Image 1 (cartoon, rainbow, N blue to C red):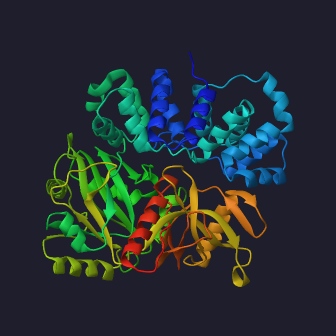
Image 2: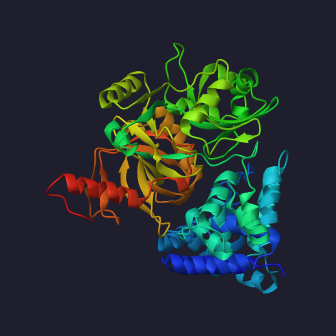
Image 3: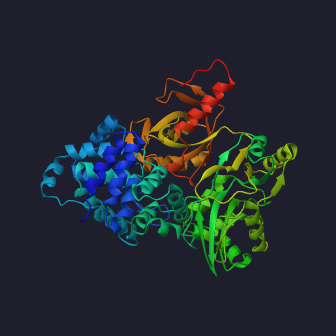
Length: 564
């Protein structure tokens, strides 16, 4: 029997009601076990606040403006009533539920509605994504209106949460991996590895249910299916990295660019971003380079693309992001913003997975299959002074700092461990999400130029403001940011707007200080935006737990501070 979307919505309500991981895991495990085969993947994506799995390249291309207009149309509620409802909740899903309950047309329509199933919701999402060409915008809007028009207030709440990717249940992907292991009595490590290799936790759950541990163990890297990238922790100094790596480490330049995963089979090439998004069309010269300069017939390689100036020196990250966002006039943009590829790892070559080989072995095999493509500059050392000098050289060359990689480290997709460290000259950086903005004064009148910055609470999913800033962006960037934020506006307070939390920015700061001004009890001092992280999504923004840990480390180093 098809599972009702209402059942999923009720589960999400229960998850919102607690922070107890064991209870959450038990509820979700029971839910997954009862799903039909074809329901598992879409249901898990929705529970994670996603329309499609991470590795799925389809997008809805529906703006918040379209969603909010559709909600108001269905419920016959005006902008003022919508803003009032949002003021009560601060949550777009809860706001939607309130206005569906209070909407004049809604109550009458509910008497005759057909109950939605998980698969019907999923098929609508797919139809919206597939609508292209002339008249596609109107078709997308009609499909969305039909979907929301068939939803109960509770269902509408979670349709909206999935659409905007802001679930706020605190049920993150790591907990989902644990739950799948529990639900089907499979070792957690097996589930985690399968999730890393496929980039699709829903597919992993489906295989776990019907093929068990043996089915998951058969999963391998696959050409043109992006795997989660291995991640790095932050080290304060090269000395810290050397100590963690037992006195010897491999140091590479940390480039101020975009990490990419390159898949090649014969003459066919696809390029994926660190978010597993297909960016092949944006980088035609890299495709040609791989076709001509990689000797392997099949390969999955990792590298960094940087924008370069006329003299070959690296350009700011923002220039590169203009290339990644560009889908038209690619050739003209490529001429204006040339890029350089540096490779640093190999995951798969000619039918052989390399993820269980050491960093040293992988680097050697990478060298053997490329012709003229440069590798990231590297040294292997035990000497702190040599390492510190290498860091200075990287900074002087215009790069971010260094990566420190344990020489015997295996490649662990999706895992952030101590096998790899990133080392920057200045460590006071956080990736935060913009949740509101204020209009500026004087020359910046009419521009949204003062930004409220928030970190995620891993337990509740709530976004907690840790400060605001008007510093860092150029005039051109502020103009573009104003346009983007206006499209994401939830509530307009005349001088200030509240926005859908979609835009992640890298923020430099001098210190984290105690502050009663914000709910979290902390605030960034002298915050300034250093770059717009279009390569990161809300899930990849830093957490309030990380902010608090940094604050407490300051507390340990300094006297006269108060713990939050």
